[in-house]
Picture 1 (cartoon, one colour):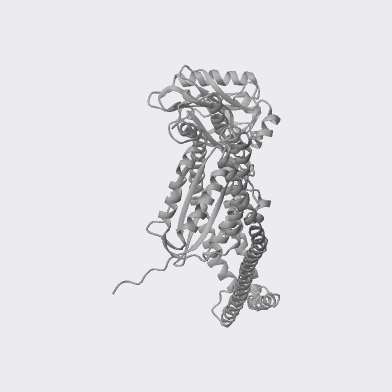
Picture 2: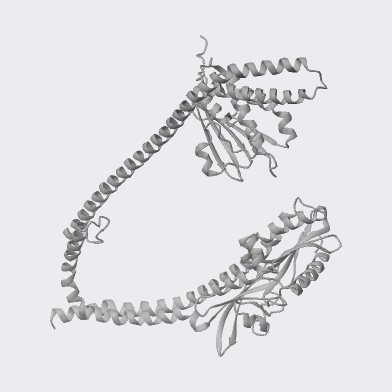
Length: 625
């Protein structure tokens, strides 16, 4: 016998026979383990579906209870009740109706969609809710009132048995939550189970079925509307499922097939979740394992016959893979690696090749990172330059306006002083009952207003050289708030101070900075007029050792975005009634700029405005030796 034949017989004896024995043993063990694993998998799936169904319904009870936590339903007016119910209604898509009930079980307010297009024009979210018929509203009122009357003692909520809606024919439950005083009224909502049914449909893979049974073993949800309307009975097919207290497993016959099913009770809902699959489909991996085992045996025998050819190819293939890897690197695919687990010279060559590819990839990545970092730096410098250019342009506009204003103020002061003096002299000579006195008083008032505008222009024009001293920022802000306290209280403004902990000192002029903060508070007070929410917040924060930030936030009318570029221009105002002079923010900008700081403004129309000031901090004196 030739050596080649002996080698062939040796390979058959050492490979095929042990493989056959191990395959049979592995198949038997795998059959038992796979059967247990499949059963456990279905039990876990049933528990997961049960927990999801419970969470889906009970979460609404929790939300309703949370909504009533600090609310007495009987103390709500009609408008407040409707607004409250609308917020609850829009909180979740599955809610079809929501109603507020008093202590006698009467529905005092409700929200539901009876005209989808009309509701959607008010709020697009209504499109995700079902349109409810009048008889369904009455059915909901009856079910909710009955459920509220029999909430178990010690419980703050209750859930009805599932039912099909009268017109839509969709499964739903009623969820109620008691008011804060127990029996004095409550909140009820009809929760549609359509979304839960869709999950059951999506959870079933292939021939697998996932469905819910009620407490009597009838089909509740399966994703098939026709079967749900028939309310198929499973009590006979799954006798252990109705009223089950723990997860179980059973087989049942349907449509001439045997189904492997696992069921689990749904916590607190008296439902049962079932996951079922045809037995042949459930055990298909076992049959595939048997086919694979015997296939491996056949392949082993065939492999012995072609082993000689593979030995020759075993030397040529690694070399071809090395050549292919070199071509990938040449194409620019630096992440390509050669997987060659050999401990000979070819393996060493493959590892060296991979090290070279890794080094090239790291160098390329570092180069890309450097380019990105350089681009970011260029963009940052560009933004800084644009910001500086915008500030310079604003300063140039103010300077140009200042030159014009200086000439106007100079030319107007002398004739204005003459007008004021003459009018005051005339008023002194006229008796109180003289009709001309009223006209002269109006002239005096308007002349004084012109004088105030001239003084504002002079503040805008003349660059101030303030005597800068260390100032306690928090005390200065508090004094300005105290000065405006009466106006803020009269307007119903709620003021909140979020000051940086500890003392914060800035370098500046007391009178000038107080005037700036007073002007900004006046602007905020004007913006808060006639607003439903009147909040004013003052925030201080240390940016670093040289600068401190002050933010003044209000919930006023806000400023249109197209006006933000002009907000610091002289004589520009966004007030609804042009009672001011349009110089306040321009003066503030000039004062803060003269102090070596900056002032910026962010605003959203209908939301509010935030004014941010950056001021230099006072230097810390050296410690005494």
